[in-house]
Amino acid sequence: MREPEVGAPPAGRVPGRSRAGPHAAGASTDALVGPGAPVAAIDTPALVIDADAMERNLERMAAFARAHGMRLRPHAKMHKSALIARLQMAAGAVGVCVQKTSEAEALAGAGVNDIYISNEVVDPAKLARVAALAARVRLAIAVDSELGIERLAAALRAAASRMDVFVEVDVGHGRCGVPPSSAGVLAQHVAAHEAMRFAGLQAYHGGAQHLRGAAEREAALHRVVTLARSAQAAVTAAGIACPLVTGAGTGSFVFEAASGVYGELQVGSYLFMDRDYADNEPAHAAPRFEHALFVKSQVMSAGLSHAVIDAGHKSHAIDSGPPRVWGRDGLAYVNGGDEHGILRRADAATPVPLPALGETVWLVPGHCDPTVNLHERYVVVRGGLEHGVVEALWPVDARGCVG
Ligand SMILES: Cc1ncc(COP(=O)(O)O)c(C=O)c1O
Image (cartoon, rainbow, N blue to C red; front, top):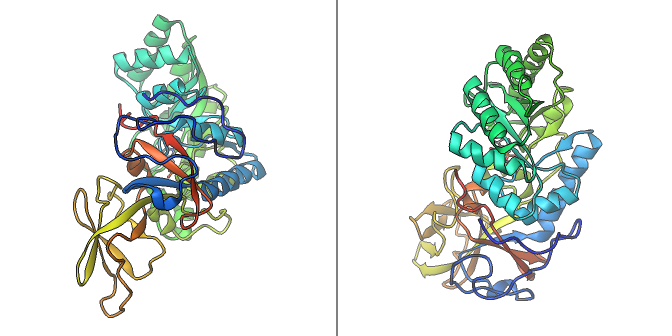
């Protein structure tokens, strides 16, 4: 857990850097730049937020949720930053989601006061931490087993705390969640405990987010919504009111919003928009999101037919494919190992220039979530990647919080 930033960020604007010194946002000793420094002074490799693009993304999603009467609870597993969570809440989000107990603890410790762990926890020691945290902030959690409910109830009793509980339904992903027909029975189990409020259903389909065609995603979400609706009916038939269905990701939220079943959107990646999401064909009704997260790198070795940059897969995740080389059409990133990236011409017949030794190269990560987890801090830039200046350094508060 990292030391919290001081003071709440002003609504709609990123806050300035609130600490100084070489150890400002973590224990690393690499060269740090301060506010006002030109982009050129940022040491490489560095995780950089284009603040202007991020704010536009933030506002576009907030406006979409408002216009569609949806609650917005963005997923903070993506950015792992209390400052960003508070910016999202200042723009209208009701709170944030996380996946892990330690993420919830890190964000709560840095001032986030409304958190939903959209995932199952069954380990009693961890549940004791969940129950202790529920006494400090508004906290909710997902369950998908009677054992999980009983263990959570025991932990809440021991801590004399209460919390909201969502029953997770498997809506086709084949990961966590009970079949829709079992949702009513589990909701009854939750409602039987004094320390728990049955808050509704979690119905999220991760696999559907990255189907490339918009029509393909729409068809997949039609099946998801049908399953969510039948789970809702099972809960009602069990004599329990179902206050909310929560779910959705950046690839699908327009369909959940149009469903009449969902009341809350858990979108995460829209804020930074990685290469993998940009490869999706956007849905007609979706706002357009811009790339706002980059890895700044530089050429450290130049060959005749390739250039080598100082950002390998310790700087950006490659689980969803390679990063895009930003602003340099015709160049492809080839994995060069832990610390190196190799740039080649995508089409050998097209002689696009290779960047020269020492030149800056901006990468758009293939997948933002695991990329963020590799870094101690964000360097926040205002005014664009070319001529902008550093506005702040923000800690990645929940970096490494995977348990
Ligand atoms: C439960 C849950 N909800 C929401 C999201 C947000 O998805 P995205 O970052 O694709 O918008 C995720 C991402 O994996 C998730 O696991």
